[in-house]
Length: 138
Image: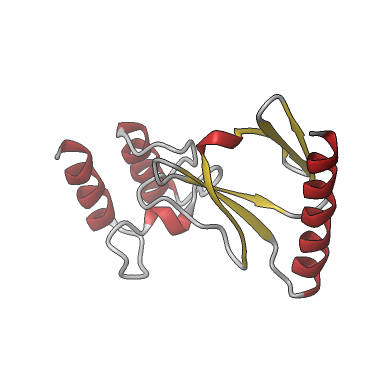
């Protein structure tokens, strides 16, 4: 078992090296429920233990259960769950509040601007907040 884990780590290291050379700054994980989590590859270190993947980078630690993961791929931008404005992996009323706060203050701290463009028109405005609210209420 240790040999398989070591081989997986070596393979992942090789992939990370290739990703850096092609300027893919994010490693994205997709869960069985369709949610995604993108992590910066800057100083990324990955270990496997007890059925979990522990990813440590400049932003901190992220623990992912291996049995929940369906995909892992590199991307040139963060992959957003549409409507997950606060990046917690869920789309709920908190995201509406964060989006409205952003619209009122233009403070994008902690806001995923890709996910905030709910209707996909390349603008973030009140239409996105209304669309997001309608999605939640469905």
